[in-house]
Length: 502
Image: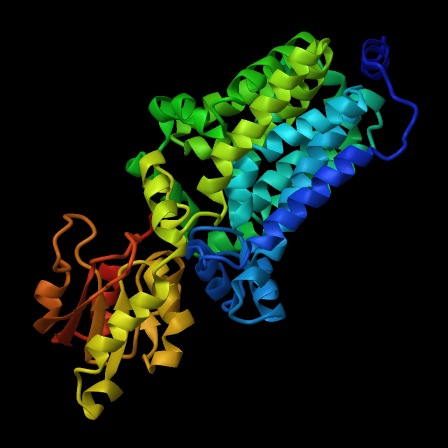
């Protein structure tokens, strides 16, 4: 019996296709909610960096492919300097992620209530209410994995091999956003083999999908090859950092999805495992094992959750037989939203949001605050120089967040060009050798000392000129700003200053 026939016989196929009005209302409410709060607080540090990267158009960067920087640049062009404009692509991607999850439920044979349950569950999770608020590679990556999940589900159900070409296009474009999608795709192929779906792979359409995906991805691969494969160095740096990664951090971190949603996810995995869509349960397991083996961040496992929530929607729909069970499920979803929303969305007063995020180990709020104050501190330091000294000065920032803040807020404060050796900024330097005075932001990142280690040899004199002052405990609060009279030219210093890390 053909694979598609077996799946069709074991999966109830809904022949009616009227719109699911409650689902459409949910998607609308989600879009309105994200849009309504999109202008509060300020830029997330990665968002500023993406805009700056987009101003240096290329097929790749040392720490990411080009798609998200391109989206950031286009969004910023709509309303320059307005944070709400930058959140438009994030909102679109997030709403599409929820929609693709519901469409996967439909392909799996779930009812309209199952579609609504799955969409509501993922909407109440940190995947949407934390990741979906800001524009980042994770936000767009989740949208691509949700789309691929839906397409693969439809392929399994219908057996329409031509869908492989659509999968190839989506995968190829998605790989221009985040390389981690390749690991998810590999896990899905392994899962197809393990689940006994080899016939789907014995097709010219499957190989055609691979050709299409690689062709679309190839400009980024060429850029990486031309620049010595910095993405490999970035991966090594993340493994060495060990932040929320490896076997120790992978599984415990999943509680961040939502403590009350984890039982639903377990139920969803069990339903997937026992049914004709076992491939997605296997994808989750294989993907998790690959991430643990490679030291990937625990947050990367998010790509496997759209299918899990789809399975959970169907399983919970079939479990709800009484009013009490219905109230239990919807109560858990509502409470999950109440827990995740204040942590991810800018709803609380700034001080309360930073305190709550710090208690939960989530830096969402504190990473959106205090960036103008970084530029203020640099300006206070610069104002201590004479006009002649200012003409020979540049700003040097320890990390891309600080450097991006100076680019955003520095011109209005009369600050000169900013440089940094961190990640993509390393390609946009060094400063001219004629700039023999530097306003240096931050201390030594390796030892935690206030004085940057490289300045001990490079500076003829080093004076602490300012401190970054903020009203709440942001990520840059209290960091020093120095004035350095250089004894070495930047062309000599630069190789010692460049680095790759997360």
